[in-house]
Length: 180
Image (cartoon, rainbow, N blue to C red):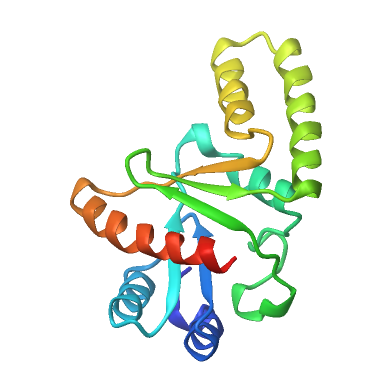
């Protein structure tokens, strides 16, 4: 996410309704990160950005998240823009954040749980057919991240940011889970 204008409607909704949002992306520009942080710190909004790890191990993470949550990824390939999302159409999920493991758990509903089982079975078939050990390891890690009612998202952050994330995100998710 490059421009603040892309997430402006999310910030406005969060401010107006005091609703909480999580944005999961591969990258946030410094301007966007700073704006989200300043608004969070001042108590104006409850919008938490999570930056996915950009490693080979996590290359299919967005696909897995979108499949299990029945959402469409926003990218140049799909032609969708985050600025055009109708927030009323967004599904709501319970979330758990673990700062020590740097992971975000998305608690799936029944439909997502069924999709998780189907996706795991497909990956297990693919794992059985695969001969290359590195690829087998990647598939195994994908399967392990798709537990029956959770999607685990690895969150990359510096050690210097860990305290801030623990403090802010922990309070946010505790509050959010009570509201959800």
